[in-house]
Image 1 (tube, rainbow, N blue to C red):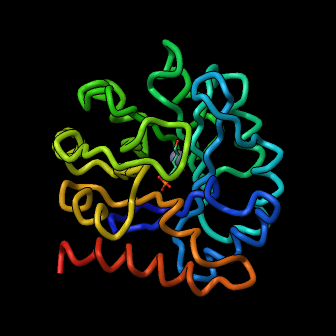
Image 2 (tube, helix red, strand yellow):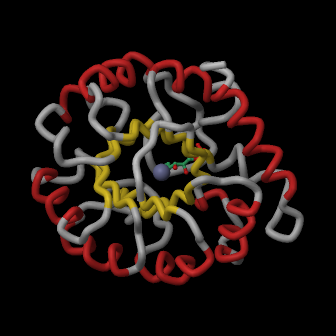
Length: 229
Ligand code: DX5
Ligand code: ZN
């Protein structure tokens, strides 16, 4: 997975049809998604349970591009190898999930995949200052993790602070939660380039009637790219 700062739209399958994940992943890629975002929840770090390594392995053959796995779990360490073997291209752990984020990121990169760190809304940008040479992605949560369809929490100041901390390092700033054509320009102008979107993509359509997914993705992308036009 090479690095470039172009805008990437990463639909979250948490908002997809749980009875039809493979076809849903193929549909959003067909309709223009750059990455597929997979929200793993353990019912302990967050008050919800979604899916695990077996689901990632099952959907892997349906995803031609990047499988971007977001681990909302604690502990993380015992599961890193399983998600890497399941085919994750990016594996993102929460800084708040236990005391050993440095070791977690080492273990992720030890699997030859990209490492991400996610920050909850209450965690300051400065918390990653010792991790900048260990991550390929920083995920800024713009909702409190656990559910799709929540109200966007503006983290523009944190995103700007991260952009200046990162400098010219090849690190994606990913935004996760409440992204739609209205909020996308806000976060892009603050310095983000990867936009996770669940409920604003997986609506009005289905895997068999996927053109609404394409319209939804194009609406977010043009709003985001309009910032730099
Ligand atoms: C929340 C997840 C988000 C969420 C995004 O814990 O990490 O990825 O699914 O869903 P929307 O785009 O509906 O806020
Ligand atoms: Zn997520």
